[in-house]
Image 1 (cartoon, rainbow, N blue to C red):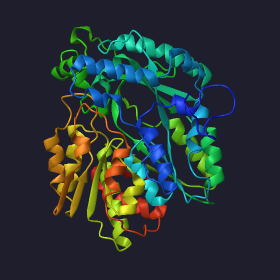
Image 2: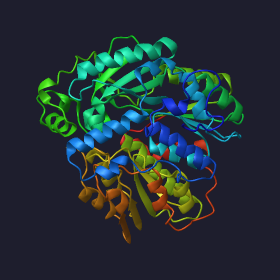
Image 3: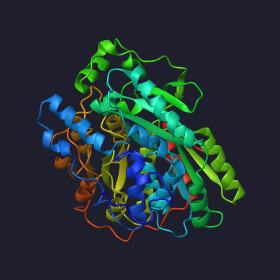
Image 4: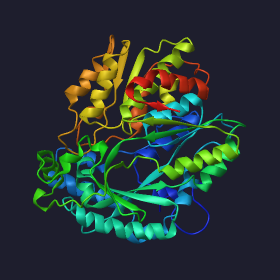
Length: 470
C-alpha cells in the first residue's frame, strides 16, 4: 500500500493531493524542490529510476508499450476524477512548506527559474494550476477528436465537484509520445486564489510582505466553448508551431510515426480562439483575486509577464550573478538545468548561477546559447540535459548540448548520466543532486534578496527580452 506523509492528506473522504497531481509533472517537482530548499535540503530523494531505462535499446513498439504500462500505474481512473477536490490539492501543496514567517511569496506559472528566484528571496513558490493524467483505455495517439470527447466527459465529472477551476486538456503526441494515446492530460487551473493558499499566506507572510505573480504569456490555438473545459492540440513545450499539427505537416507525420500513430486518422477539431493562452497560463480570475486579497491584507502584488521561458531564465541567471557578486563571490560558475533536473539548494550551496531550460527542444537550447553568447564569459559551465523519453524532430541533439558546455573557459561538462540513452531514456530529479553535490562548497549563502532588489534586477536584465515587470 502507498504510504502517505502525515499532514499531506486532507481530512475527510476523497483523493489526497499526492494521488491527484501527476507524478513527474513540472509543478509537482518544482514545489517539492522549493520546499526542500527552504528547509536547507537537496533533492536527493526526488524521483526513482524509471523502468523505461531497461528498454532504451528495445524496438519502438516494445518501448511504447512499456511507457503506456508505466503511465497507467500512476494515472487516475475515469471514476476517480469525480473524487478530485482542487481545494484539497491546494492544502497538500502548502503543507509541504515549513511554517514560519516569510518576507514574501512567489505564485504563478510553472518555471524552474521561479523556484530559483523564490530561493534567492527565501520565500515559497505556489503554482496557479496542477496537472492530472487519467486513463484512456481505448485511446489512440492519432485521434484528437476522440481525445476531446473522452476529456470532456472527464472534465464534466471534475467540474461538477469543483466550481472554481478551469480544465485545459492538452493532446500533444510531440511532447508526450505514446502516452497521449494511453492517458489524457488535464491542467486544472484555479480561477481564484484557493482558500488553502489564502490561509497559508495570511499565516506566514510578514506584515506588508510583497507577493510576486509570474505569468507565462505564450499563446496557442484553443477550442473553448465556455463550459469550464478547453482543448488544445499540441503545445508550445513541444518545440513545434501550431501549423506543425496540421494533417499535411511533415513534422506531424514524423511525430505520429514515432508515437505509433497514423497521420491518415488525424482530424483535429476546429478552434474557437486562435490566440488563447497556452496550458501554463494563469487564469485572469486568479490574478484578480490574488490582487484583491493582497490589497485587503496590506500586501502589494507585483506581476512579471514573460513571452517565452528563455526570458525569465536569462533574467534570473543575471539576477543570481549580481546577487552572488554582491556577496563577494565570483558568479562565474554556471549550471544549465533542464526540465526536472534541478536542485535549487545545491545551486545556492555551491554559489552557482542557474539557467533553466524548460525542456530539451532546439528552441530552448538555442535560447541559452544566445544568452551565453551575449553574456560575460563563465569560467565553468555544467550542463544537465533531461532526456524527454520521446523522439521528435524538434529535439536538440547532444552536439547542440555540447556546444552549450563549450562556452566554459576552463571547465566544460556535459553530464554523462543524463546523456546516456538520450533522448529516449528517463533520468530522475535526484540525478541533478548527484552531479551538483560534486561542486565545491561556496559558503556562506548570501543574505536573501529583498523583493525590491529582485524586481530591479529583473527589469534591468529582462527588459530587452520582453519581460514585463509591474
